[in-house]
Image 1 (cartoon, helix red, strand yellow):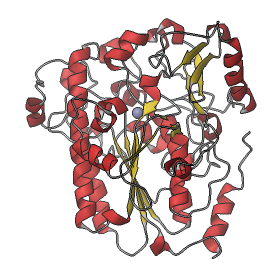
Image 2 (cartoon, protein in one colour; image 1 turned 45 degrees about the vertical axis):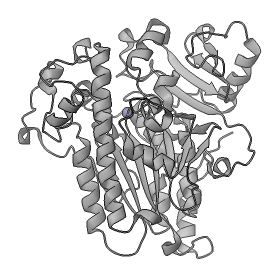
Image 3 (tube, protein in one colour; image 1 turned 180 degrees about the vertical axis):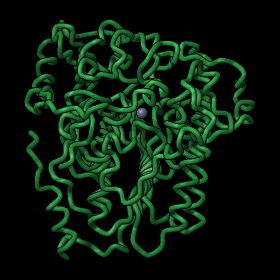
Image 4 (cartoon, protein in one colour; image 1 turned 120 degrees about the horizontal axis):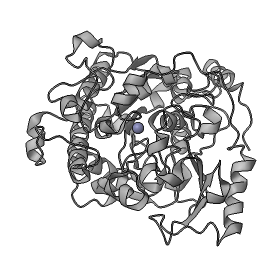
Length: 477
Ligand SMILES: [Zn+2]
């Protein structure tokens, strides 16, 4: 279905130079894209969580559109973000693993959302909060300004020793460490950029928060009091009740920081001209993931890992609507290109969400996600649940979800999410025709092909990934 897209950038450049496809920049809205790392929709008030701690996010949902069922393309940070920024599934954008011979950087010839917006006059900036979004993975491609917050050298902070326990790694009042930073640091930098920019051109800012990803990336101590936790305790990933208390506290902190960003937009008069998208790269197992599938973190491609919040508000977006039709992370870039009258990036796997928002009848969208555990030199293979130590490819047609096991296809899984949203009753043996119909998508789209590349010497910073909990020994969990 997909074709090579070598001329994508030329297309974008041609539109920028010509007048026929370039409306006046003053007609174009600003774009604020917020990605909340590891944030499950069902922990947000606007998705029905009773213990809601997210008033700012919920208020944005109320004045915009909320997508009830939105899926990411991966359970891991860089791969999922690459899909958001390109509109492509991982087998087309090329960022497949943390490190390995199937690609760990965004392929250079792939056009990105900031490149397209820049070509039609936007100022572009990315403010991210953790190493997995560092330029190592190529996610800075196309941004004029790109800040990771990990510029400080080791000796500028008192966090120079390898983390031996989470207690030692609790940051308390420290807003940034070697490999990640807290939402207040990221927010301050984004607001500073917004204040300092001048001129009338519209802007595109991507703001990424990492707090709920890491138990140790905690808000200031007064927040602990509010959430009934103590930083004197030793939180552990396996202490699921405490983990969930920390998760909610850090989610509330991110919401608070988003509120400061929204306040700035309102005070500066930019809010009404700004389209705001809030989403996540993936979810998190928490206690239900552990109970249902033996995994409390992310990476796998069950719903608790790949279902994401998706909210959009601003000019041309109706208020208070809920869309039930399937939306995908790859639909975000095409939607923003439509709202900004920017030319397409080239063939994309995603499609604009505007027809769904307008309630039009559209062809059923197919969602894809993968976890190439066998190809990733940073996959915690021996610790994954036994049935998941394989390359996993998911296809979802709005009702049925196939999880194809690449190494052992006979162990593939099939779920009817309408009657079995928790993915507990495997229909793979009893419904072979449905499984084959979904598998045909993988074959037609060449989703199973593994494009071999030469991995860079050295690979990513293993210490960074270990300390952020992606790999390493169990004591870090
Ligand atoms: Zn992530």
